[in-house]
Amino acid sequence: MEVDYIIVGLGLAGLAFVEELLEAKKTFVVFENNSQTSSLVAGGVYNPVILKRFSPVWNAKEQLAIALPFYDKLEKKFNTKFDKKFLIKKVFKSIADQNNWFSAFDKPKVAPFLDATLDKQKYAGILEDFHYGNVKEAGRIDTLHLIETYRAYLKENNWILFEKFYHSEITFQNNSIQYQHLKAKKIVFAEGFGVKENPYFNHLPLEEVKGESIIIHAPELKIDFLLKSTLFLMPLGDEMYKVGATFNHKDKTSNASEEGKQELVEKLKKVITVPYKIINQTAGIRPAVKDRRPLVGVHEKHQNLAILNGLGTRGVMIAPTLAKELFNHLENDDRLDVETDIKRFS
Image (tube, rainbow, N blue to C red; front, side, top):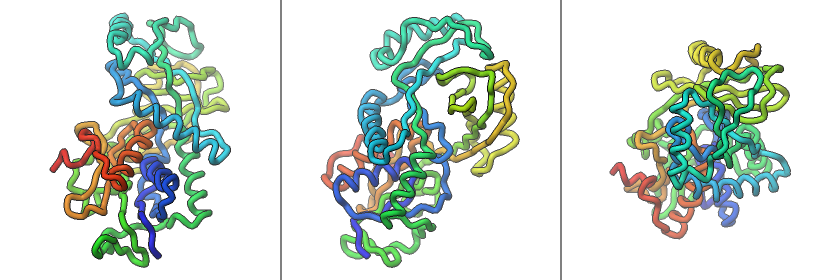
């Protein structure tokens, strides 16, 4: 069987690249073995502002201009809802925190996303003494629903194999690649943390950061916005809320831990006063890079091997942009962004 592309991994990065292939009428097959779960358990929030420092997310405006139409197209394609719009309300911890919020209006890349009028309303069950700041143009992509829907779509069309990909079985033949019964022009690795087992790209400085979150049922908490404090509290509907997330640089497993749960419970005590019940707990490994930029590009020796990885916590926003840039590089020789090109580590 001959195809244009083999895609390894179907998280947000792989999914976005497949959409580029479909639009260009390229043939492909995807390998996915569920070994990496970061996209499946991600909060899926898109937020153009780093609220810890009231600074802009890198290229937020440009990324949203591509990402929002991308998810809208997928909603139309599958006749379902993935994008949940909402405000993000930042809880101020002090007057100084409020002052820093207003100072951020002097930053041209931040100001358009901030509401100059503070929210002084009292919300039952939420601990706050210094009001809230509203972040606009934010929301959440239901990544679990999206990826499950997309995998079913690929399965229906015989475009996906639910099995492990063995890097050792790649052989190079002139301008093509042979893998088992498949012959392809190029392979794109979108494996997330699984790239650590990839002999062609495991030299890249990808760091694994474990993140855990819990789902709580809190009937007395009546909010329809994402609350950002020492953690985030995100409404899911039916009185359910997602609470997260932890950042663990030592634990390399994708298993939910008692330590992670207790960390979230302790932080939650400082945010809400209403009773709740923990319904579920999830964990995943975020693929992150030291310089906080993704890993995009081609292998130095094997130009028909490419990588699309290291999206970190911003996968929802950045995946459509990176997929488009990588596709245009592979097909049209367009230049990659120097900030994301893996050549910066050569």
